[in-house]
Each structure stands twice: as structure tokens, then as C-alpha cells.
Image 1 (tube, rainbow, N blue to C red):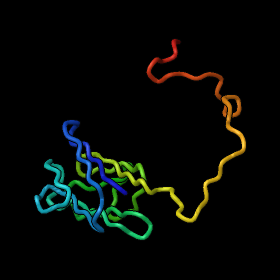
Image 2 (cartoon, one colour):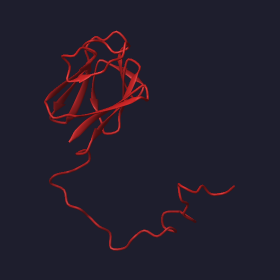
Image 3 (cartoon, rainbow, N blue to C red):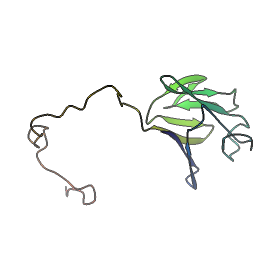
Image 4 (cartoon, rainbow, N blue to C red):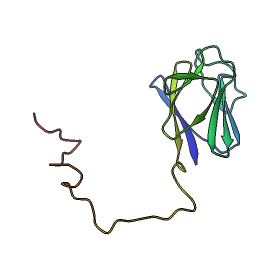
Length: 131
């Protein structure tokens, strides 16, 4: 299942599961995802399910729509893409990305050791390595 996660000025996080074929985003209450921010147009953008995933279309908004820092009018979305509606930042998450329904899981006969992957030591992210 795909979802849109919006960070509204670091104060509020909106997570919207993309269930419908089309999801509208904007400031007006008639949208599926309502973003109460003056940089977001009343009808800002739409997300549409396509055979290959999802597409994002700017609906001629005043402040534009971006994917990974590039202004778009209509573009395909990929898992992890950063989206901007005006000054509001969000992320597109697609849990089904990279899953091949007809593919088979292949497991190697041996496991990678730290030497095989070029790691000389391990380090906890909670206790940084002293320099």
C-alpha cells in the first residue's frame, strides 16, 4: 500500500494511505488531503494510481510542486521521493515497490562476513566511535 507523509512545518505530520485511484491535495476542505498552509493552493495537486505505480500532477498551483527538488507538472513517483507542495515537504512511500509478484526469492548458500563486505569493525549508531 502506498502512502503520502507530509511534514507541516515540523508541527504536524499527516499520513494519508492512498486507497482511491485519485487523491487530491490542497488547502480547500473538498480535497482528500487538506493542507492548511498559505503556500499550498486550494486545489494544488493530485496523485493518480497508474499501471506502473503512481503519478503526481500539479493542478496549476501558484507555488508549484516539486519531486526531489525538481519542479514538475506531471511525473511518475518512486518509493522514497521527496515531494514539495509550496513550502510543505512530504515523502511518497510505496510498500509494494520492488516486489516482483512472479519472482522467486534467491538465498545465497553462505552469509556475508564483515571481511567480505569490507567492514573492519562494527559501530553502534547510539554510541558514536570516539575519534
